[in-house]
View 1 (cartoon, rainbow, N blue to C red):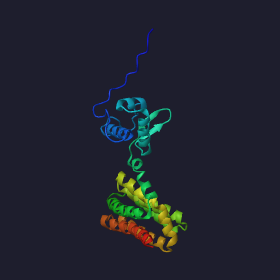
View 2: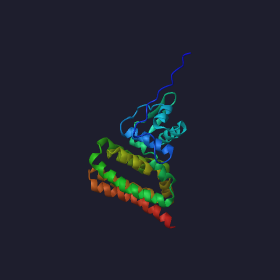
View 3: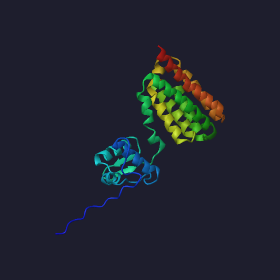
View 4: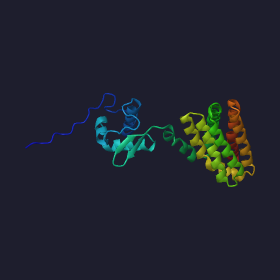
Length: 246
């Protein structure tokens, strides 16, 4: 009686078998990341089956499943129902999105530190934007400024505030930098709302700070843009540090 030969699977490569050091799941994560780094898996490419990967790396399917799940959460892999698991396009915005979660859940002392990081990065991004911003992006900034001048509701004001900064970081032309600043900026949304409601003159001061940034960008002056952005974020940072001292 004829029998069906067992399915053949690829032999593990020397650099991945057996996996050594750390937990099995962590080793599997590092192995998949190495495949991507070395070009064996490319953006948009479908991964081998979970079973084949587990055999290839010499681990259990449950450990491989956990590794794939972890890499999916941080945006490196994506699961498509009925199709399989794929490498994402590895866009900076997707990969760095979880960075902003740190700011969202951090206690006030850590949030103050993250605001300091934002001040450093956003001032640099604004200086870059002064040399690279387009006429259409300057026009967008003018619209956001008008919205801030007319807004009476704090949420509407801050939505325009965030759009203003997003336009600048995009104009800087550095996707990774824009993604990090976006994470830090959007996750401090609630802190800025509280500031606006607690300080009667916070919004008028913020409008003036944004106007200084806008003028520096219109004048294509990187150092003035850097200083204006640093002063603006620094004002929020100073307010938060004052809250910590109370």
